Image 1: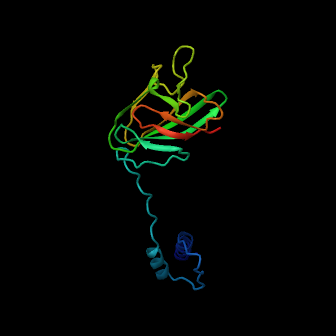
Image 2: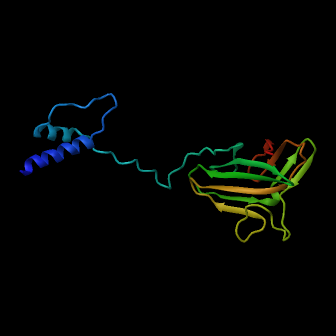
Length: 192
């Protein structure tokens, strides 16, 4: 058998398997000639490369947080704070706050837990972050520190900060969270 018909069959198979057709098109019953095969192969578009992601140094747009309860800008340039969880369980209330840098700079963000508290405006009661038996705050702490978390947050960086408070009474359904460098998160609904 000659190599010419084999090459023709291979080219035809490549064209038939390599082309993607829209659902409304139907297959043709005509027989392809070598010139038809060559022109069909030339008309077949080449696959396009995937888009290249932006460089890590480019400013990142703020990404929505899936379980956002409340979000606001902070006093640190480009940094926003989003409360993602505010849950009472037993005798404690856990607050989780996502810090995100959607700017172009790399500010140092610092949370001193002696400046973090809940305030029940109706009862005029303040709740400070809990401490363990050694006096360290029960919260996201910077390694080697017992009273704070800090870091230089570059563009696109985010950090999930958490802290534990004594739980307010069960009849308290909303309360205000105060973080340093951030306006108060007023009247947050407590998740039970």
